[in-house]
Length: 261
Image 1 (tube, rainbow, N blue to C red):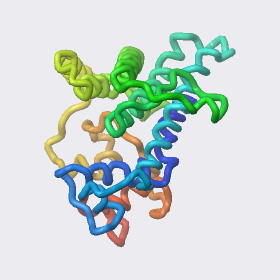
Image 2 (cartoon, rainbow, N blue to C red; image 1 turned 90 degrees about the vertical axis):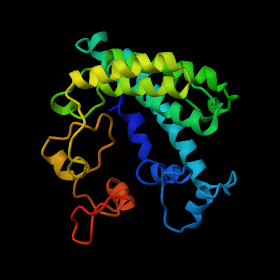
Image 3 (cartoon, rainbow, N blue to C red; image 1 turned 180 degrees about the vertical axis):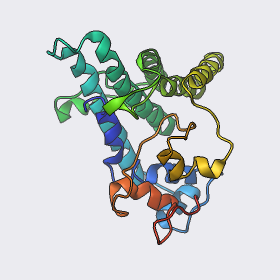
Image 4 (tube, rainbow, N blue to C red; image 1 turned 45 degrees about the vertical axis):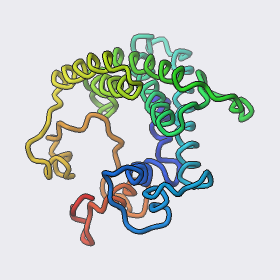
């Protein structure tokens, strides 16, 4: 539960990963279509200002994820359970480090220099620190991703089924090198990520519509999704779990899968 805290925090903010973040940041690029809505057209036209609610929500959300992740990274090694050995702890620390690195990669992409927190905070006052240069944050998150790549398993079983795997750590590491414009390491890391994904059973699927359908996941046949935040099947359409499905309009009035936008 501690290891997953950083991932769970990504849906706590109203405009965050449960709905708006992905679609709205797409609106800032030339690869996205959006309905006419003031919140969205501000992004399309780049007419927003610092009071835009999305920025506040995303900034708070990523730092909440980071603090939850740091709580796990700091706390798991202090476990007093003698059967929970340091080797057994590493995969769960890796889950938290992956979430922390993921959040910092998003923050540096949107804001550049941001405050860097090596450890969890015990009081709000500890949050008031100067921003850290982006270059230093990038180096720190790359180290976390190296740890994740080395210590996440190729697959999980039982109650841990669905947790991030080694392929996710490897893929995110390649992306971080690319975003850091370290092209030599990005090329090496990308090749390594492909090899790990291939060995772990991930592969491109021939049928795109089936790949993006709920059925491919029900069948256990989807081999493309390397890192996902899952929603609860058949949950209330107005609740957190189905927010992304509402945004992407993947269900029609009868609840059946519809077009994906």
